[in-house]
Length: 440
Ligand code: PMP
Image 1 (cartoon, rainbow, N blue to C red):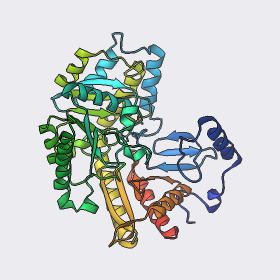
Image 2: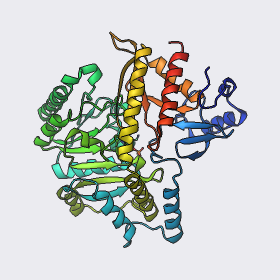
Image 3: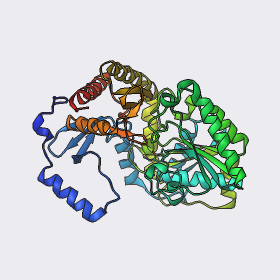
Image 4: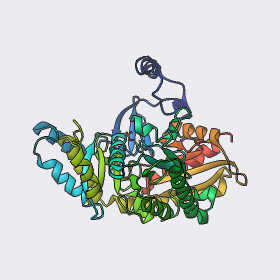
């Protein structure tokens, strides 16, 4: 095994006694539903900016974690949470200025027609709330999602997440459409395929007496295989859904908060107007805060009919964390940075495709990139086993990524937004070495 990031062959040895004990305790206490990353699980004890540290003090370049998106343990976020925790931590049923300051700042990043924000703790809850709002507003039940979507874990939302596995049987009110896969459908066909699929789904719902309520889409189609698609390619399909009375819920849990570069919100690339946007993961840089942003008439229709209280959603400490995250993104111009470094990464990874036949496609928007591995460029046969080996070889070399897509043959690369060119070079080198090292 080659050496990158200061790692030697011995570092790639078996589990330590401590790691073995932790794996055993975990299985005994948490049960089998929790899955660990990597064949040799990583025991992280500390994080700082782009780095995670294990118990031996080895550091790992984090090119996967889009929760601590502005950097692990960011001092501004830690300080904001500490100050607010010392002063007050209640909930949204008291008057408190922090939540309103944050709400104003957050809403200021959206177009003027999105005027309301409601807070939750997780992305799943945000999607669940958005779905309830859409169903109330439209009086319908039917939902359109992509074929390998992931939107979260509540009962209703798990049923909109076919990527949870074959045991997740979709209920009768759900229809799926193909995600905008330019590599497999052809860039020129993506927009019309998507729009045709949406129209067919609506017709089929109507034929079965199902009233359409919402189209729910991850703006980067992450679980479908990291599919940014050509800019604007989902606009026609979404317009068709909205014309049929459906609300468009833009799930920004993955692409939101500057990840896709230039714009703060991933859907902006597509020239569409969401009725509701759902937020999560990077919103508090690790502190649980999530929520929805929506049109006033839509959100108010729900609120007039039903009260809403989420004990921890929008609490003062979470809002302080959320505000610090937005401040850092805005002050450090991380959107531009994500665009620049993302472009640099895309170029570097695309160059690797000249030397590694197994790379079928390299794609991305900002700092959300996918490298699709295929065993044959002509047939585009997915190279899932090789992708698994690349991910694990990179982990042994101290660089963290994962794999996505229905067959998990797409290297999923989502670095901490503060990555520099040096970090990007390290990452590209690690992909290069892993592709060379694994017997393909
Ligand atoms: N939507 C998308 C697109 C996601 O990727 C996720 C989480 N991976 C969620 C929603 C759910 O978020 P959470 O895990 O915070 O419930």
